Amino acid sequence: MKEQRLIIVGGGFGGLTVARELRNAPLQITLIDRSNHHLFQPLLYQVATAALSPAHIATPIRSILSEQKNTTIMMAEVTGVDLKSRLVLSRDQTIPYDQLVIATGSRYHFFGHDEWKPFAQGLKTIVDATSIRRKVLLAFEKAEIEPDPVQKQNLLTFVLVGGGPTGVEMAGSIAELAHHVLTSDFRKIDPQMPRIILIEAGKRILATFPEDLALRATKRLQALGVEIQTRTRVESISSKGVQWGNTQIAAHTVIWAAGVIASPAGEWLGKTVDRTGRVKVSEHLTLPGHPEVYVIGDTACFLQDHQALPGVAPVALQQGAYVAKSIISKLKGKTQKRPFRYRNKGNLATVGRSFAIVDLGRIRLAGFFAWVTWLLVHIYYLIGFKNRILVLIEWAWAYFTFQRGTRLILEGEHSSNASTPRPSKKPERN
Image (cartoon, rainbow, N blue to C red; front, top):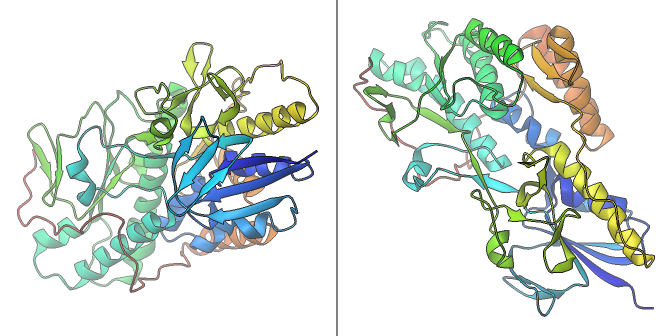
């Protein structure tokens, strides 16, 4: 019997889990990704704030799957899917499949204000992270030699839009970098001058965490010098900075962490999507009417207890493992009867040095022991023994020396946005 052809589109947590779980299956597996590496996104903000090198959290997909004889890697950009002919379409060729897994992730969503993109840097890729790192470090270099106090303040003002885990972790890390790490290296920058502002439209930050833990995180951020603006909707982002209501903040660096939208997979498949572009799937994570097509991770809208599952790594990991078992059942001539069920093992977020919050249901932690838990969990899920050791070394060095080892400004690093705005000369604040 001819081996079935399985195409996996996306080398993130979900797609990679499917491939690894099927390493011994009688399949011809092709994993397609437009990048050649798997990225550990939960630590991407540490690359952006010079705590880690990109190589610490990214591993070539070919290296990860090098010993899987049933798997071929293809670096290509998928442009569509022909469901009737069972073909995956790329810019250069078409690839036939018998079974298909779509795990293409998400991208940042500016809520209809795409004109903000050139001025608000998102954080989804290594290019984004190194672009933010370069911009933050250059801001200090320029501020050191800037004679105009207004321009100096603009350079040292950092605005983060979005009070979820990404925005909170970025804000805490930038605050430590600005107030404790970099200012000791500069002679003409007052350690109190850097200004970090976190903007959240909701009534509080970290809305997915229990309120008591979110309050602890809020107090910690404020202790680090972060200004938190809740119940605040951004009205404009431009070269002049950020505006809401009658308040205009002139800022050299604006980072967007406010919302995401799914990849264009819904357009490829021509199926029903939710308001964030996620494809609505069955209880078995299959495309309605197409049991040979699975959609998982940030690309899938899966309802559990009448609520759509969040686009986080644990969901993608568990969905990937479920899909692999379902495919094995099909190969054995059986049907997967048990619907997918996500087990929430807890939520974690770190807020600067040696402080984190952990929600494990009945168990809630905040502080140093929560931070140690956060460290262990992230080390465990990092791919590759070498990466785990390197990250541990970097974290130990930063913890004991208050230094960060990747503060390099490299020529050739560039923003994924169209341009880098120049700060406004006259900030107006209420």
